[in-house]
Length: 284
Image (cartoon, rainbow, N blue to C red; front, side):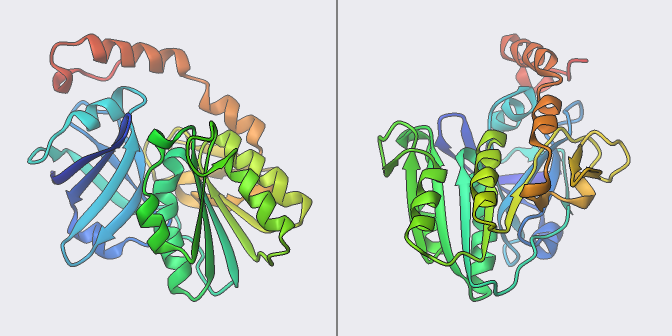
């Protein structure tokens, strides 16, 4: 059991939890994730570690309430405990002094981008961070990303804050300025990562993406998180979560992400209608 000692609403449906997990906090590295289970009947879901404090023995988890499991997790309060927090899982981000690294975070993808930007900056890189959201109210972690980077750019789809456009709009302007970019890291919704890779491919810029497909056991045994990278099957939980974005089959990834939308919506609706959310069992 992992106690929640801090909770904050960052934006609509976006929650931040700080949980006690001393061994994971000490061992984790940028880019890794945990699998959590809110209660005994809860579904196992992967969440990237947004931050960690080894001295305090805590992890910061930031997530968006989309389906039943994240709604259940978001209903927990300070003083409650999460049934299971397993990790750190996945391969850490490859960090070295590349030169100039552009770290792009779209929507909730800003959360997993945060530790990567921090690590890249600590390694001596010039970190240009680009974060974006549909509108100003949905933008998260601006202050923390500013502290983690050399310079920060912000975009909103509707123009309510920062540059009117997408994160790729800003990346294109940086490329046009003649800035020498050595590496691009893009994390966010699949369409955002796909668009980022299509842009960087035009300029032969190495690009890393972090994938978050359906995942069950987190050890490579179930095969639920398989993706195609460079024409070969890879399991995100053990081979990733980061891959060469120019090699990812995004078309297949989207199809797999949408495979259980009907069941996911049914589970969400039943959860919302249930009088005691914490006792509601996972729909099958």
